[in-house]
Picture 1 (spheres, rainbow, N blue to C red):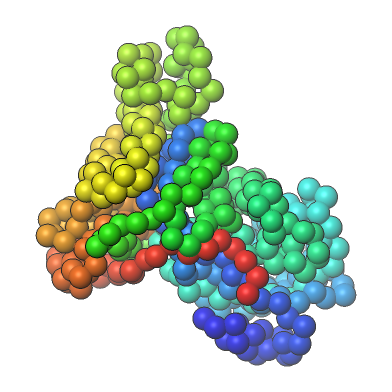
Picture 2 (picture 1 turned 90 degrees about the vertical axis):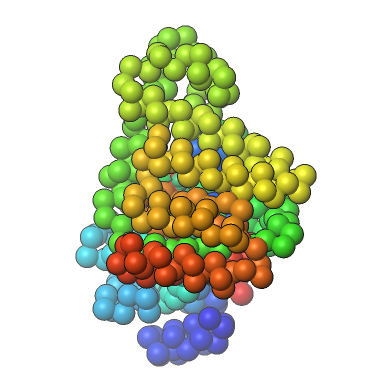
Length: 393
Ligand code: GLA
């Protein structure tokens, strides 16, 4: 969407667009390192070029009014700065509301209400972090509207951590830090290599030669994702507690190499928790190998690691499901693809594939037709390049 499009939406919704500011935050696709962030491991996401646009303007009273043209049936949702509770009837608006609430709780003076309209040009529920995108767009908007000076690197790290808190404490999902970091700090043409235990990070150029990234949305509606996500997290916590009890001096599963884990895996009493931990440990090692592969131009090795990641998520972590497995397996069968895996939380959402650029159409036909035959409805495809993080536009 162009800047004038979102300004026109503001004008239609609230009367005039005079003095209105516009902001954008991308979605993200995680290349590899799934369900490692909250286990103190590494991740390798990139910001996308599509995401969330916000147009906003301060008010003189304490009322906030939000409208999203992705959810027109919800109409304009008003709330007061003084009473900001998570209200299921407010649906999507709970995300900006949570951000405002936590800004204020953290002493960041959002001292008047405002009007905002939102337009997302990415599918929600597709595992591409539309929620982190709305949160970060709101946060960058608040920083600018209320002159909080949080747009530099240090400020972005702070608001990424704050938006993670919104997910954990206001929305009720125990998610890790990956999505908010990718959305806040993404850089065009690169992937963000992040150590989630220390927050150390660097950018890895995404040079895939004659290949490119294709994102495939299962279009499966994701029921119960939050509860299954929280369940995986507590299974990993139980595995970690067993390992620590048996003498492992680690603060998180990310502290173990695959060899160290194999030596002590029997200490994890529950076989399900043992498999969850095995995924977390091996997936973390795969991220390190994937970065080396990318940096030395070994794209086929990078693709192979993506495949291994999917298999581990399918059998050890059990976050894939029929639709994601179908997309991964069809991608592997097509002649155009070097590797494919689910991305994001799983249980539906999206997968990604590394596909030869001149074969993307043939690839989409091959996968799309068979997916429809096996699953009964269409998947969708996006060609994807790595974009920049949240910003005023
Ligand atoms: C969701 C969470 C992230 C991360 C992924 C799985 O996107 O928000 O923190 O845990 O799932 O890798």
